[in-house]
Amino acid sequence: MRKSRVCSSLDKLGGDIKSARTALHLTRRDLAEQVGIDPRYLANIENSGSMPSLPIFYELVRICKLPLERYFFDVEKCDESEQRQRINQKLAICNEEFLPVVEGTLDGVLQVQDEQKQKE
Image (cartoon, rainbow, N blue to C red):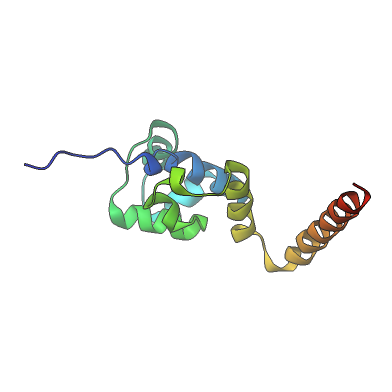
């Protein structure tokens, strides 16, 4: 008989859903209605680490625009820091109209960084 394995990459699912829901300005009730589940069940997923069924998982990841690979591959093997992962997640849900602002900000930061390197 196979031993069950703990999937540490799924440990962050609830927190990721809650963060994305908040960033998308959705209430728990709004997201639960879109997915077709009870808001209390969503609260258990977000706060208690309850694992949703595959169809519910798919809908939550799709609506919240979460990176699916994060939950199927070891996060420890990923070279990106936690902060880069959070920024990538936020970029994924950012409206297209605001991306030029983000890009301009990054261009400015990179220019300052380049100038600092040249002074060294």
